[in-house]
Image (cartoon, rainbow, N blue to C red; front, side):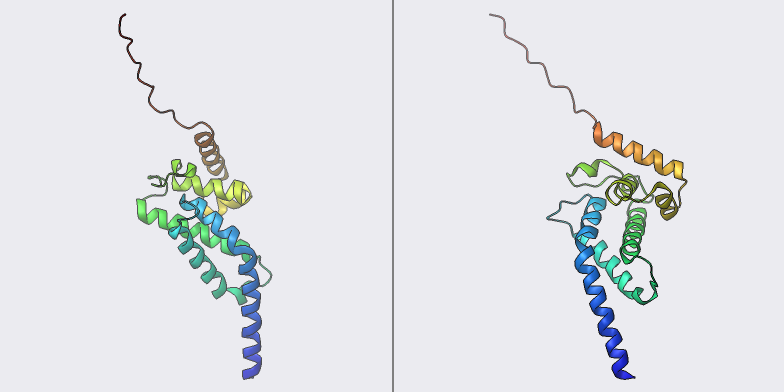
Length: 165
Protein backbone atom coordinates (compact mmCIF):
# COMPACT_ATOMS: atom_id res chain seq x y z
CA UNK A 1 0.00 0.00 0.00
CA UNK A 2 2.80 2.37 0.91
CA UNK A 3 4.60 1.70 -2.40
CA UNK A 4 1.41 2.33 -4.34
CA UNK A 5 0.88 5.65 -2.57
CA UNK A 6 4.49 6.67 -3.22
CA UNK A 7 4.13 5.69 -6.88
CA UNK A 8 1.00 7.81 -7.25
CA UNK A 9 2.72 10.74 -5.57
CA UNK A 10 5.68 10.46 -7.92
CA UNK A 11 3.40 10.27 -10.96
CA UNK A 12 1.46 13.30 -9.72
CA UNK A 13 4.70 15.24 -9.23
CA UNK A 14 5.95 14.33 -12.73
CA UNK A 15 2.65 15.34 -14.33
CA UNK A 16 2.65 18.65 -12.48
CA UNK A 17 6.30 19.34 -13.35
CA UNK A 18 5.50 18.74 -17.02
CA UNK A 19 2.54 21.11 -16.76
CA UNK A 20 4.67 23.81 -15.11
CA UNK A 21 7.41 23.40 -17.72
CA UNK A 22 4.89 24.07 -20.47
CA UNK A 23 2.64 26.67 -18.85
CA UNK A 24 4.66 28.71 -16.36
CA UNK A 25 6.19 31.06 -18.93
CA UNK A 26 2.87 32.02 -20.44
CA UNK A 27 1.21 32.36 -17.03
CA UNK A 28 4.07 34.55 -15.80
CA UNK A 29 3.72 36.75 -18.87
CA UNK A 30 -0.03 37.07 -18.25
CA UNK A 31 0.62 37.93 -14.60
CA UNK A 32 3.22 40.51 -15.63
CA UNK A 33 0.70 42.10 -18.00
CA UNK A 34 -1.89 42.17 -15.22
CA UNK A 35 0.41 43.84 -12.72
CA UNK A 36 1.83 46.20 -15.39
CA UNK A 37 5.32 45.52 -14.09
CA UNK A 38 8.45 45.48 -16.20
CA UNK A 39 9.23 41.95 -17.45
CA UNK A 40 12.63 41.94 -15.75
CA UNK A 41 11.34 43.38 -12.44
CA UNK A 42 8.01 41.70 -11.63
CA UNK A 43 7.81 40.55 -8.00
CA UNK A 44 4.00 40.92 -7.81
CA UNK A 45 3.57 38.88 -11.00
CA UNK A 46 5.90 36.17 -9.69
CA UNK A 47 3.92 36.01 -6.45
CA UNK A 48 0.66 35.69 -8.41
CA UNK A 49 2.19 32.89 -10.47
CA UNK A 50 3.47 31.07 -7.38
CA UNK A 51 0.08 31.27 -5.67
CA UNK A 52 -1.70 30.14 -8.82
CA UNK A 53 0.60 27.16 -9.33
CA UNK A 54 0.36 26.19 -5.65
CA UNK A 55 -3.43 26.28 -5.84
CA UNK A 56 -3.39 24.22 -9.03
CA UNK A 57 -1.07 21.64 -7.47
CA UNK A 58 -3.28 21.40 -4.39
CA UNK A 59 -6.30 20.62 -6.57
CA UNK A 60 -4.39 18.51 -9.12
CA UNK A 61 -6.08 15.21 -8.21
CA UNK A 62 -9.54 16.81 -8.36
CA UNK A 63 -9.20 18.25 -11.87
CA UNK A 64 -10.77 15.13 -13.40
CA UNK A 65 -10.34 16.01 -17.05
CA UNK A 66 -10.39 19.80 -16.56
CA UNK A 67 -7.67 21.81 -18.24
CA UNK A 68 -5.06 22.62 -15.57
CA UNK A 69 -3.97 25.72 -17.52
CA UNK A 70 -7.53 27.04 -17.47
CA UNK A 71 -7.75 26.41 -13.72
CA UNK A 72 -4.41 28.13 -13.08
CA UNK A 73 -5.40 31.11 -15.26
CA UNK A 74 -8.73 31.45 -13.48
CA UNK A 75 -7.06 31.45 -10.09
CA UNK A 76 -4.47 33.96 -11.32
CA UNK A 77 -7.21 36.31 -12.55
CA UNK A 78 -9.35 35.99 -9.43
CA UNK A 79 -6.35 36.45 -7.15
CA UNK A 80 -5.31 39.57 -9.09
CA UNK A 81 -8.85 40.98 -8.90
CA UNK A 82 -9.07 40.35 -5.15
CA UNK A 83 -5.66 41.90 -4.58
CA UNK A 84 -6.61 45.00 -6.58
CA UNK A 85 -9.89 45.22 -4.67
CA UNK A 86 -8.13 45.10 -1.30
CA UNK A 87 -5.31 47.40 -2.35
CA UNK A 88 -7.41 50.12 -3.96
CA UNK A 89 -10.76 49.72 -2.22
CA UNK A 90 -12.54 48.87 -5.46
CA UNK A 91 -11.37 47.22 -8.63
CA UNK A 92 -10.53 50.00 -11.04
CA UNK A 93 -9.97 53.10 -8.94
CA UNK A 94 -6.22 53.34 -9.23
CA UNK A 95 -3.62 52.81 -11.87
CA UNK A 96 -0.31 51.00 -11.62
CA UNK A 97 2.75 53.09 -10.91
CA UNK A 98 4.96 51.34 -13.46
CA UNK A 99 5.98 52.99 -16.70
CA UNK A 100 4.54 50.30 -18.96
CA UNK A 101 1.88 50.90 -21.58
CA UNK A 102 -0.65 48.87 -19.61
CA UNK A 103 -0.06 51.03 -16.53
CA UNK A 104 -2.41 53.60 -18.11
CA UNK A 105 -5.28 51.19 -17.54
CA UNK A 106 -7.17 50.48 -14.35
CA UNK A 107 -6.69 47.02 -12.84
CA UNK A 108 -10.13 45.98 -14.11
CA UNK A 109 -9.35 47.18 -17.63
CA UNK A 110 -6.03 45.31 -17.60
CA UNK A 111 -7.73 42.16 -16.32
CA UNK A 112 -10.40 42.20 -19.02
CA UNK A 113 -7.92 43.10 -21.75
CA UNK A 114 -5.43 40.39 -20.79
CA UNK A 115 -8.12 37.73 -20.52
CA UNK A 116 -9.81 38.72 -23.77
CA UNK A 117 -6.86 39.58 -26.02
CA UNK A 118 -3.77 37.86 -24.64
CA UNK A 119 -5.44 34.73 -23.30
CA UNK A 120 -8.26 34.57 -25.86
CA UNK A 121 -11.00 33.97 -23.28
CA UNK A 122 -14.49 34.54 -24.69
CA UNK A 123 -16.55 37.50 -23.46
CA UNK A 124 -19.08 35.19 -21.83
CA UNK A 125 -16.39 33.27 -19.95
CA UNK A 126 -14.67 36.48 -18.86
CA UNK A 127 -17.99 37.87 -17.67
CA UNK A 128 -18.77 34.70 -15.71
CA UNK A 129 -15.30 34.63 -14.14
CA UNK A 130 -15.54 38.26 -13.03
CA UNK A 131 -19.23 38.23 -12.15
CA UNK A 132 -20.07 40.95 -14.67
CA UNK A 133 -22.63 41.17 -17.47
CA UNK A 134 -21.26 40.37 -20.92
CA UNK A 135 -22.10 43.89 -22.13
CA UNK A 136 -20.02 45.35 -19.29
CA UNK A 137 -17.02 43.21 -20.26
CA UNK A 138 -17.41 44.36 -23.86
CA UNK A 139 -17.55 48.03 -22.78
CA UNK A 140 -14.51 47.69 -20.48
CA UNK A 141 -12.52 45.99 -23.24
CA UNK A 142 -13.46 48.69 -25.76
CA UNK A 143 -12.55 51.48 -23.33
CA UNK A 144 -9.20 49.83 -22.54
CA UNK A 145 -8.40 49.43 -26.23
CA UNK A 146 -9.30 53.06 -26.89
CA UNK A 147 -7.03 54.17 -24.04
CA UNK A 148 -4.13 52.14 -25.41
CA UNK A 149 -4.64 53.08 -29.05
CA UNK A 150 -5.33 56.77 -28.41
CA UNK A 151 -3.36 57.80 -25.32
CA UNK A 152 -4.05 61.21 -23.83
CA UNK A 153 -1.85 63.90 -25.26
CA UNK A 154 0.64 65.71 -23.12
CA UNK A 155 0.65 69.46 -22.69
CA UNK A 156 1.17 71.55 -25.79
CA UNK A 157 4.75 72.68 -26.32
CA UNK A 158 5.57 76.22 -25.27
CA UNK A 159 5.92 78.69 -28.07
CA UNK A 160 9.27 80.45 -27.99
CA UNK A 161 9.13 84.15 -28.66
CA UNK A 162 11.38 85.38 -31.37
CA UNK A 163 13.47 88.39 -30.44
CA UNK A 164 12.91 91.39 -32.76
CA UNK A 165 15.84 92.05 -35.09
